[in-house]
Length: 425
Image (cartoon, rainbow, N blue to C red; front, side, top):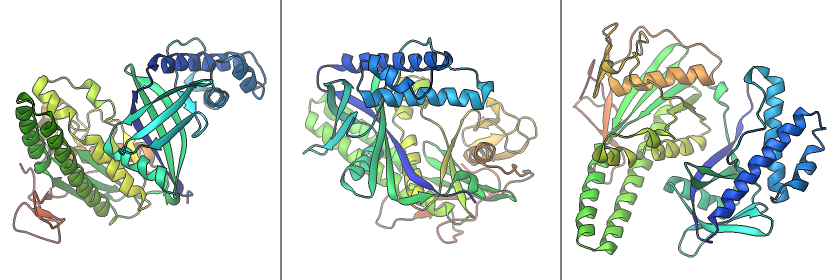
């Protein structure tokens, strides 16, 4: 039995720098790269590792505790090299920037403003600070605001860095009262495939597939398009205040629906033995999407990561761990024979060009995600999959006070339905 882990979250934010010195932060990340390279160089030369932190800190134009955190990360890379030498020795000649690692209330500070924003102050250089406001996913901001006001949360180290030339701050927060079971201690893996209008779930154990479910939420897609059309009209009419009001309404609507869907995902997962919920890592998805102006707008604004984060956050408070896998070809791969090609999938219909297997394409993707989750996070083998259960679909209510999905046809058991064998549109 592996010990439970503390509930730790890494929250990503963009920096709206308002102190008119963004160049200072960039210079500091360049200086951090020098500190990293110098640490690796000294370690390669055989300098005593205990002497390296002070030696580098004396020469670096950075706050001392920030330099020490950068040095510690560099020495960690060298330690990994000696323990797993097949990864290759770290380089000490790389250029560019390197993340500033800082302790809370030493290298950086956060505070709530009167209008509900979170302001930051980063000690980029000794006695020189970069100030501004954090921007990012509302889900991450909600957790950070709670952490700033609650004694149950501890704010830890953060990294200031540049991603695609944009300044970001990644903050670690820990809940001191909650623990999460280690992923390797799970006996069921729940693969979650998040899509534009539904989320597909598959629970996979050593005995095979325990159950699968597709939850439809078409109202999110519909309402986002409706609000976009209204905002476009009022913007063309020059009514900016109305535009901002509509944007706020849309945001609240989507957030409410995502919270409800994420609760259903967690509650469904809890019925299985020691589950671990696994998602596709879609962090870089936005950068790789280019399907034309209209489709880009639809896909760039879909709340994929928000739903993943809400689910992960709620699962953590139930002691359920979450994992992440590479999404490569999860939607094109046949879950039975493993054959993968783009022609296998046609919208919601999946038909393998090799073995002829047919399935709901999103459910099939969730099976593949669960399989990858076992391969990455578990120490038990993937079971042989010779057949899949019926596709079961539920649909969330588009309106009304009852927080439960409606079914797609008359057969009802609780909030789920007996599905139709094969593919459902």
